[in-house]
Image (cartoon, rainbow, N blue to C red):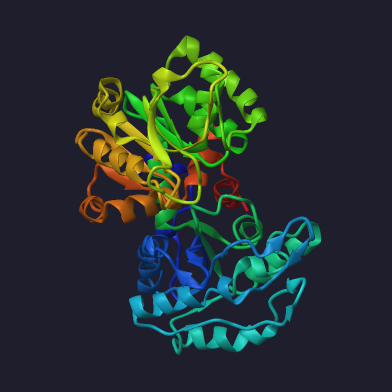
Length: 433
């Protein structure tokens, strides 16, 4: 165990769990269209669940699924495809136990008002081991989860009233909501095993072995500026992909591409100027231009070289990095000599353009000495889809680590510390209550 963790965070292994009802917040946000696309985030929390039950705790579990709340209209829609039912079915099969989902009255526009006394019988059954656990409905169906002021505080008190102890194992849920933040004010609160592991590896990103290479991509430029600049300050080398790379190229070479907004190109100019001096960005020389975003249509896409860029030139949609880029000496040497590699990137426009991501992951794997850390659900999903054999072979490889939340990693980097994440701060502060 990382020493700083032991001094900073209250840990589940130090909690008295025997005979206690334990409210556990997970990030099991893996359901899309009513189906589990990838159970990785659930599987990573099994250790915490096993530990909790093995030491006599009785779990009440919770997660959010999707975005049921319309921020503009202020309404909450409880759609069946954003239910926790697929999660409970998966856990029941995995753990050979029976889980119970309580039902509460639903307002068509306001979601669930709160937790009522109808849950008490299920809690009695939980204590008496008639059921293996309770899984609360989607946290974001409750008005108080993302509500403000008294509404949120009342919901946090209702949650706390269900249990004796609170455990946060939801690394991907970094926003301070009732079930990740406010509830810690009312119960003895601890970090689960996954949260501990993620923070330990985040420290490796914050204090990396050098040279440190980051590979970052994104579908938008404006929303990623702050974490991108924070990463830029930390790394020795930076590689960009997706719209982020396209925007950078447009700003540097004064060209235009379909899908890159003029205002983003202006924003990227600052990074271009910064890199003229520090020269940290390693460019991919060959990119794939397409006439359309409707698919990989024969005769309508081609490889172009950034050496051919001239100010004022216009291009179509740039939808991938050509794998030949990874054979170019500067690119292959940068990846091959790095001691720490952090990847939060899908290089191409999926599912049609995936050769760039495949070449990236294969090239990174050839560096046997580096600590290789991948962040983000999309990044992990792409790795798994394109290279299933490699993915399975590295799951237990100590030189690889897969974070469960890419956005959380970027937020922590932006703020300079894993302990700056509000739910983590709340756990530390709960020690003083």
